[in-house]
Length: 351
Picture 1 (cartoon, rainbow, N blue to C red):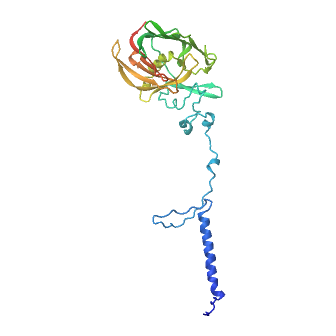
Picture 2 (picture 1 turned 180 degrees about the vertical axis):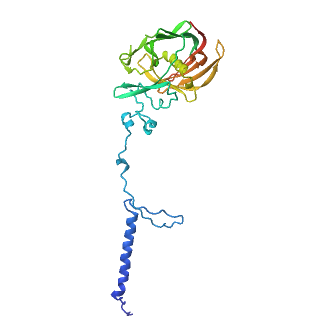
Picture 3 (picture 1 turned 90 degrees about the horizontal axis):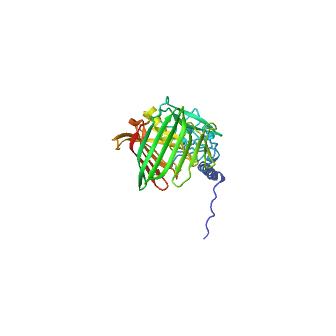
């Protein structure tokens, strides 16, 4: 069956469709450019109904990739790469404490927060190569001469101990001895002088049973601490002590400023042994405790030194304000093996 051929629309009637087609292409291209742009244009989020919210076009600067942005480094951080975050963030007039050696002093933020009377305590700056070490030093008031007799306990063993404190004519000697069943366990001796910061050790010796004696030499004319055994040395920081003298130094500090025995109170000092070791000891106030002793009850203030490294010893010390803050109890715990060495006052003898 023959049908009529399709009737073609006149050219004038086909133009509107081309206009519509090109308009759709332009609109689609514009929408594609907006959605896949380089991040200079932001669009609204989807509304809860699922429809697209009204488009909002806002030009923003093209950010530099974060891995290329140069990060400003505070001056204190450039000078002291291990300064604490607290010291770096806060504007300070002087550089924050730094580290002389990873094995010597790491102040972290321990010294910055010591609540001390600024009239009684001053900070000493000590040159140490390319950096400086800042350790607080304190005004001191020395206790009188005395001999303290202790009951001693080391692990499951018990014995006796004695701390002798002899100041005379600008010099001093401190001696700590301990024995079990008539056998000497240790003899530690500190000799030195006094300076503006309290005790100033010159030589410290440590003798243990079945071991040769070791010594630390505080060479004040050369500003360093050296040892009879290991060939190492450390800067001689003002107020530095040894393993005996610190027990008198902490008493002298509290005699001069009892207000340090308050919540969050701290006392810091560099303490050296005789085997090539020196480290910052930070004693934190724990609280007041009453102790029993052969001479009657004793009111004490307790401070502790927490270990900072794997083989550090924790130290607890009880100081009696009515006895010139002399130590009436001390406990040393080896962090590695857990051995405990403890002294508990039996009586005090004055010369």
